[in-house]
Image 1 (tube, rainbow, N blue to C red):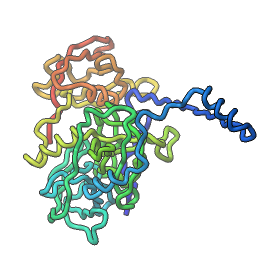
Image 2 (cartoon, rainbow, N blue to C red):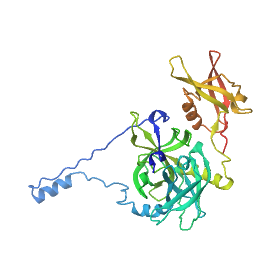
Image 3 (spheres, rainbow, N blue to C red):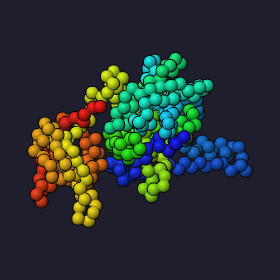
Image 4 (spheres, rainbow, N blue to C red):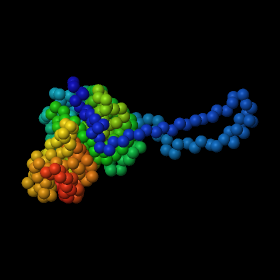
Length: 362
């Protein structure tokens, strides 16, 4: 099985405003001299300030959380690889990544402990958010996961990533929420286009090939994210350690519910500029902006007066040297937002006010 195609990597250069820092706390302890008398040792202990116990010590084990969540996480197999998925409901609907589903329409799914896989089929997919829904033909015994409010997670929260890395069914890794509301861009793969994900959760819990589509879980056993990709090392040749990203559970459930109810996405909640664009190279052959190839009739760009041949160099103050930067700037905005778009036209720079539209559904 080609598991390497079931976890995406984002180069650090493509992560918007990604600043990583580290800090450590050294804890020292003084031991009493074993040769001292009991009286002296007691006096020393009395004179030394007491070291307070941790306010909220973590549990010695997360076994109960894993037991609760594991029956809701499935291994997904396709002809081209494998990944993970999370059971949504008693009807056997399972949310996963669009890049896990790829071009497949039929799947094999298996819960840890199952003696045999069960067949499943595609319900729908939405590549812009890297989400898909598949449905098990036999939902008996599948346990729906409990989803939490991803809007309440914060940096420092302990989380577990549960999935099937490298085909190792029901594997668990631990980490923390490193940051929230990241805009990250996934590179294109065979059968799956590039996608810019808004509001991604950054975590230190290792995300390995096969974890994609699984569950990022709080210590109360609630799914708060769908692990999707690991950051690529800037030197190449592997993924950066301790930097992974997950789609917030609120977004995953919303998009999945739309797919289940209608077969497609009717409300993307994502801003769009309403233009076909391409990266423009400067005189030194480096990316120098985003050229407008065509505008959508009645779209945001046309209403603001943009036209083919314009070069977008900034949106809302954020430089847009290429289409990835433009996608990330739009991912940070909402439909209806008014933004200042800086364009170059006929050799002159000008600012244009654009009321953003909505990215079409599927």
